Length: 386
Image (cartoon, rainbow, N blue to C red; front, side, top):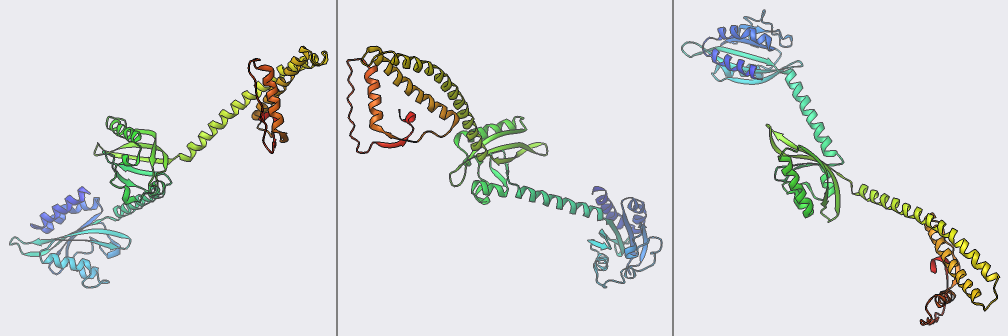
């Protein structure tokens, strides 16, 4: 408090010349700044007093003149701090101390009063009530402690960098997320935790911050001590000291799991879109195949075995049936439902495919079939196996 320091300095200088005049000069000021001023002789009897009464110690400027300091502190030890300080001031040494009276706290300053010859003839005292200041300081310290605890226990990484990118402050979450101990990280450049491309981006962002961009939000991939790759969602701002950039403060949230879930959701949505498209195509194919099979059945029923039309119609039937099985597979994918689970002879399936190829391939191509599996019976969906 500059005003109080000025009063203390003035009282000390005036006390060297005329203690009573000094007390009279400073008395009115003392009342306005919640302080008391007094002078004593060498026997510590009050010779003047100014300021507000302090009932806790029996100080009343209108009634205390002529009383001894020892009487005011009769309930304390003879060598208590106030009395000892006054006696030291009588030896020529200025004194400062704090004194509590009830629930009030005073900042006290004593100066020797000297005669024209320089001999100490008494004491000039100033006591400033600093109770409110002390309470404000306690409140400030308690608030700072709460903020420190809040930062330390926060689930997100809270960090500070100097302008070169070196870590100068970290909370407990940084240890938990990165796997490093705090002393391993402090003083380390943040680029050492990043992939080369990410390190380059951080350097660019620091330069942009120095160029006027005071805050930024971005994703930052980091490598933990175990080598795991994590993604932090970072919000950072430029820090100023005396109006000049001095560092960067930031908060980083681990969004690795969220990113993984988002990717899974996007993939699921893509698959659902594909399944919906496949279902639509399958229904369209079924409509076409119904007509093809209907006419093929009609041709088979109206022709004799061995006739070219009859054989061609049977080929159409087999091809259309296989197309229906493919359509069924598409519908199964679209509905993600259960497929058929039947006993199938793989040899028979291969023979059916060979017959289809024989009917569709050019005559100059011959398909040879060799079925030698000792056990050709499996469980499955015919449409999935064709």
